[in-house]
Length: 322
Image (cartoon, rainbow, N blue to C red; front, top):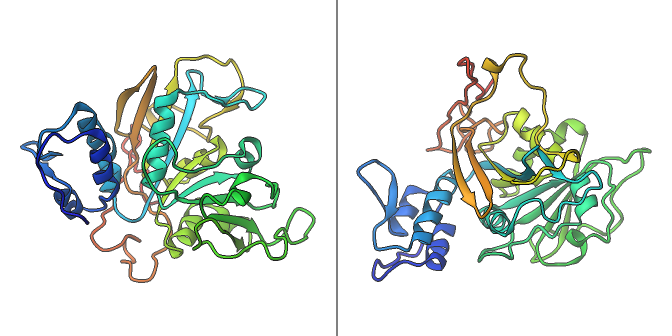
């Protein structure tokens, strides 16, 4: 990583450029982030308020290591990510859009389910901030996302189309000649999984890690994010709440919960204002995202130097590795 000089006042643009390259404590030191008396890190030179905010918000994500699953949802006060007609443009405001694009820029891959891909025809690229586009991963076990959608046609970023071995009628879901390598600047590659079990969060994260996609943003929709949360496969969750009431619509987080309040998940979290919206930055610890890859320690499933932390219910039951 580039060794940055510490002269002058650090502005937001340069701070973001430095943060994008941080993946370890050594990187943080090289970027000019020094440890304070409280053990936290701060810029070692004069920095603008915006630069300080960026480090505070994104440094925990940068330092989380090469294997990381994190998710983002924007929703209304009453928990909906879109109206009952599916309109989601936009539940949250411009500041949250910029935050989402920063999360994409810090990821190797961004994942959406077939429902979101069909309904929203998203680009899943980095446009509201500086950064490199992640690989776009479309989970489509039945092969129902139209091939005219932008993730397959716009060429702005590589796309990995993850499909099942057969469609709903037992027919192959991959058209001949579509897959031609995810390594290109904007190509489409096809990953065929043998059965529905291979689409579960942990096996899926393993499959992506084998392709060098270790830092994974789960972007949507609510069903996909909820599945990753319920299966304890997320390390961090960002939920932005807009000051709007929809009454009904497409729900955000939904999963089988506890019978009593004392068993509810109460992870550590931070709150921040994003314009009129409120961002909840939720630390879910370091769950086990799959069986160890080659070269990993079998006792943790993490690369050397990475630890494991449990997330707890209110009654002290671990939500870490089962």
